[in-house]
Length: 333
Image (cartoon, rainbow, N blue to C red):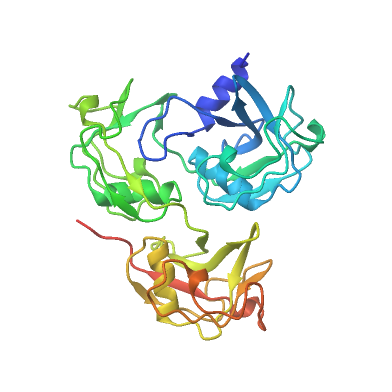
């Protein structure tokens, strides 16, 4: 039986199942016993055949945790915790030796030893810490968004908030089916710079003149394994370039780094055209591994790792040479 604690935690923290529709009433993964200041953290539990089950931390890494963060709509992964950091669970252990590529939409799509097959105990329960990006969850209720004035700029904010790359379309007319319950936002008017949808202009929380036949949607690209860190406060599409390699965020060396290389990053993030390709750790030196050096893109690649380079994690530089980018934000009004 699902406990009340997990039901409440699930509705408060999880935004699983619905990647494209701005409403979620079901969840298949929850984070339990997380920190009070970050609801997007906690012990990972998945719903298998009507039972909540924990995940063993064998081979648990940032790629696996990244899938959980995306599934919950919680932004980028910050940590993949081991050793029951958020306390030991109870009941069954559902997955062991999870092996994600990072592109899966649900944790159960990743490689693993088989449902319920494991050789660990709850002292090895896995956890995650994600960025706390809030979807449309208002006053304790999930709420839909009306499609009045809904366009690509508004939908791009949703895609960015979910870490799902650039926007592909902004469907109207309950394309993904009508929701239930309250309608949270109407006449949404984003500039494209907002980090959360509720920061956009709108007619007022829970104020609307539409029905669920007008529920808005968004279609985004899959979450890319690249991010920008320590960017300019007025330009979210700027910062130190970091890529996800083998479960770790790694920086890029600025040897041969130029506008063509930076344009690939801007395109991969859905951030418009490149403005500059800073050298010399302009956005501060990173930590951990250096993933790429002597990057050489032709400008047509869809991902930075498709460009020429010396080899993954092969370099002759230090973090004082970390590369950065400054891109325009997507403007489609």
